[in-house]
Amino acid sequence: MSSEIMLRDAAAPTDPDSDLLLRWENTVSTPIVSASYPANGKAVAGVYTIVGASGTTINITAEDPKNELVGTGITVVADDSTPNDLGFGSFVFSSSLAAGWTAKASVGALMATDGSTSRRLNIGTVIAGNTSTQRKVTAVNVGTEDSAETKVYGLPGYFVEGAGVEDYIAYIRNHSDPARHALAIAGDYEISFGDHKTGPPETNDVYIDDGGGAVKCIEDAKMDGTLYEYGVSGYIDAADELKGLAIAFTSDPGDPTSKTFDLHVRDSSAWLEFAPDVAGSPGTWSAGPLTLTESGEVSGVITPSGQVHFWVRSVVPSSASPGDMRLHVYRVRGLTV
View 1 (cartoon, one colour):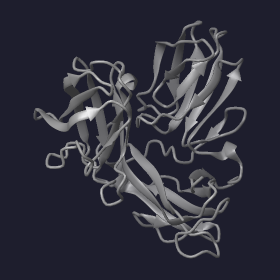
View 2 (cartoon, helix red, strand yellow):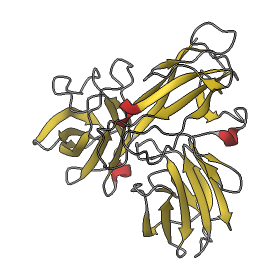
View 3 (cartoon, rainbow, N blue to C red):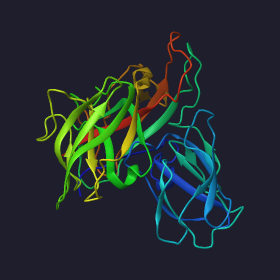
View 4 (tube, rainbow, N blue to C red):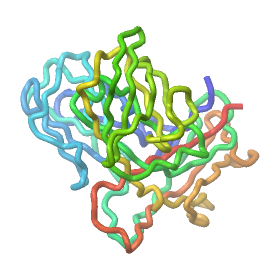
């Protein structure tokens, strides 16, 4: 196993229940059997309440008023085995699901076993010209190898939506190269397909429309989990229509040429600031990236089970106008040595 960095609450960095990715707890009966974190960019940081409306429908509310991953009467498959993509996570519901059965889920928040939460990476609403509450976070190496050149970054956030999107798009991520992973341009994009060829693997040309007309982004994209990004064969570098991002498609899902999906990219990552932890208080704040170094190790090294505290906050400029959700991605990168 290689190095693997997990972000956890600084008060209990050795406890997996302090993970700040996806956490969930059943609070009334047992509606959720299991859950997994999605790879499609839709996992907006926040706290969600999931309530059974019937044996086949749920209602979802969120802590933050701008969160769009809410709704009533959402149809789910409740059979103890089928994953249901709710955006902020993929959930398997009990075959006994009933009205009033309740669970809570969090992305970025610290969740206790009773479902109560407190803010960590889910910053919430910050008024223009103000600074969010600063939060202390811990990077823990849960892998078996040293992590070298370890850094934490704030990157542009995004999510993709559309009927059946999870059947065709396996995931969208920030570019794998640190020289390009912050280049995504804020905007709303339409993803469409053409020239479908049966496989295996099936292939399709992929087009991106930023409002000025569809432009070919990928030639004969393989529908088999292959990652496409700038510098990969098939991705059209000259157009670079998914600047700063990477995309992969599910295996042989069928002809998608009648489908369109909407990709939304936001740029509020430019407002994130990081600071090293100095004797329990934040050191000098900067826009990052911030190098994370375990005590007693050379710069950027975190050993297996090692940990590094750091601080994060959002500084919203006075020029920022009210708008949609401010999305960003926290990424910790390290090399396995």
